[in-house]
Length: 277
Length: 103
Length: 156
Image 1: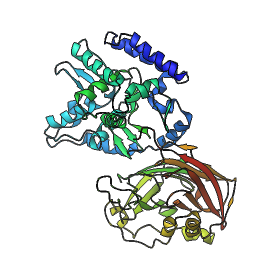
Image 2: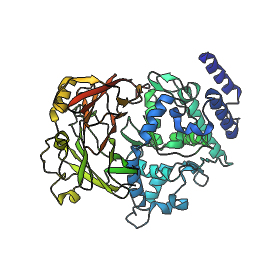
Image 3: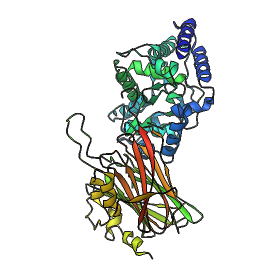
Image 4: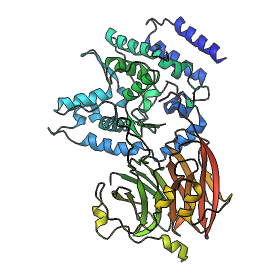
């Protein structure tokens, strides 16, 4: 039965003008409808909790861990780092609107002046460089603590990724969408295969999380990592897991993917940093 | 200090203490993926909880307690505003201590 | 006060004023760690671990001990375990992961002020029984639960 639905799913996807004719808004609508049908028992707002929104047993363990989640240690560090002035006396707040507090829901955004997708991590490092500091490593460590803290101050805010009426922005969105649906690697699997068409199914002993709500809780503390990691750290892991080419963190490809991926969670609340297995 | 977070709440006569500590908790069995050598055991061996200078509970830990360990226990005879102190010591001889007020 | 409990009550952790100066990385003089039974953690079998930690390996199952642990651990490195009991006079609680290389994960020495309750997160190498052993009035009582540990899905 599942196979039938999958084929139907793919057929529907092809039926919807996949060659970029469907607008992002149409894509978003279809995306939400898909998950609503696949997981009728999960309220829309709960998708930000990933597998815990669709599986009671793992949810119970997650709730226990959330009693005192390990990312709290990162939050303390993040707050300290965020507030510590650079050598020139300025702080991160000077680079962001609202002093960097409560702004996660707007990232990533398309900078029409530069013609690029700007992610939060990219903005953090650009802030450092603009103030005479060295860049931080992209995937873990201090950047994850700072990004986590900024996400934390934004908890509850509604994700609101904008795609300006600019062909370059739409192109970046479409590039991200293409990455998401494209089969890749030796295992020949697309992000969509696991996280859309087979979301809720088991991959050996892992339950596949729905992509709806995926990026609401990043950066994330993974039990597996024993620490924090950024979105691009996870993208790298996923691509390696299907034996596909891993792109550099903050490469155009991953930023485009993050742009599309986050847009698909518009309307949901920020709940980062998250705790996951 | 920064390596210990404490949350203590009194409800009637019972105070519930929850604590989270920052520690690698290496078992000594793991191998470094790059060098192939075993990463030496580096884990908390004892956690002591004190209330008003009296030891309330002592925990003996092995490497099988998770990284960035969590511990919760309950005890009687304390009130809001009292201080609870958590101290840890590890097998390397390092340690840390932190205090928090019971809410 | 029960002498059995007095044995576990420790006097102030460190010598006087050094307490406030303690920070991570500073070596702490090894005080009389009489209660840290290293042998319990070195033991490769449950029997040896219990004998070293509690003085005996004889225990009786009791439904007065409530052991909360997941049926299937989401991640074997972080398994939440909570032990509570309606028994009185509990001096110590041990949590054992039977199939671990060293089954003893932890032992908690409770003073008379403590409620019979402890919660932590343990590492489990593979599917096995998690056993909560409680020492009360000199005797050991236990509750066990099988926790399944699986290998992840994506191979990562």
